[in-house]
Length: 570
Image (cartoon, rainbow, N blue to C red; front, side, top):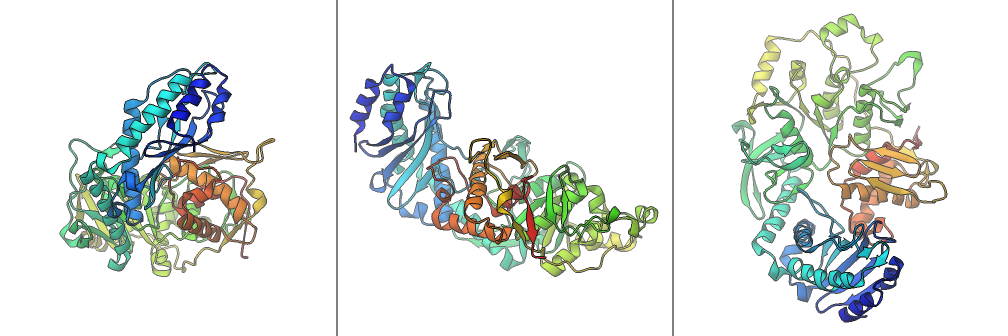
């Protein structure tokens, strides 16, 4: 393997040549205490940066076994190290020519702790994958600047970011312990009869809709109602207390701007672990919880929405419902059925993003429009059946319909961001002021039938390119000729997740979509492969910008593919 000095000489030797001369450098190089791998060289200084990685042997890096002893700790350590690597990249990188020349960047975590491909810590070594803009003036190699970048700056970053002795050991312990405690908590929810837990003194409000960091000023710490108080003993933090949300139907009520949606937003992010200082470190939710909302305009392909919508005019079939432009009610019904088919055991719904006519029909509307003229069975008349027949709980934010008091098991009222248990009061109000509306369904709720994707409908080609799949930011996937809009998939929280599930869509097409397996079987097989082989299984390249998604978000992406065709077992 060539060494650091040979790499420096090679870079100086190509100074002034055409940019393509950089491609001669692909390969591996031995530095004093790490190995450098140049896996991909960009075609020109304005193209996507070159992909590099370093491996530091563990006897050099020195991370104690307890810092990466299990998946919880390993993912947390990787998140910490990615942040440190990024900080030192920003400190050292400098503009060195045209386009992206001089860029050094790594996939940078935000508030969530996710399994990522940018950092891997194992018993043998620590690996970091990152991107570099190889310096050029116009399209001519700046070899001496490249030598300074690769042979001076990168070793300095590796030394500062990837060696345990250079890190804050106490901060590492905070990362790995909080992640392990959160995973422990989440695993205990079901045995305690809970769908979620919010630790005492958590900080739920965020700085803004585009800044997910905790509110810096005037944030009110979470205060647990006595009647919903539960305690856990965590592996690292020891005893912790907070509010438990039980199985069943839970309403989060209260006035506008008093924290209802803030609490629900914390719960929907509670399927992920959070970094120390986030404020929601010990806010955890059922890992199968799915946020449901109306989604006007989405495509629906052969979904049985008849539990909610039936008897459409002109005899239109709702057991195999298809549309290229779903309404609010049909899209919300579809989103529920698809979540159930993927295995969701908890639904999270905010009335602000729900279709009103899907959620309720009051007494006066029932008098004006008879049931035999209304194809929608509102959610209020199906939410109990979801729980009693399928064991699916619902956490619902309501501020405008007290009729839901009749079907709720638990009512939490938010008052100036302070929760109060209001179940007894809500039931008293319901008894003293009975609604005159008529229940519109007493039917059981059966599990959705499996849907089988047809392989020809997942076509990744575009023009002469056999495979054209990529992402645009957090909310858009380009798959062949199709654009998949994920703007309503609110539990997709990181653009690296989007890139990984884009790769997973292609992986599904290449390996498991055969016209025989159901979508759920395909999802399970993909997640099994990731669990066994890591995220690298999804891409033939070694990439450093993928993060782990849930199978629910992958299902959402596949279901929103406008070319998708499915058949079901009927």
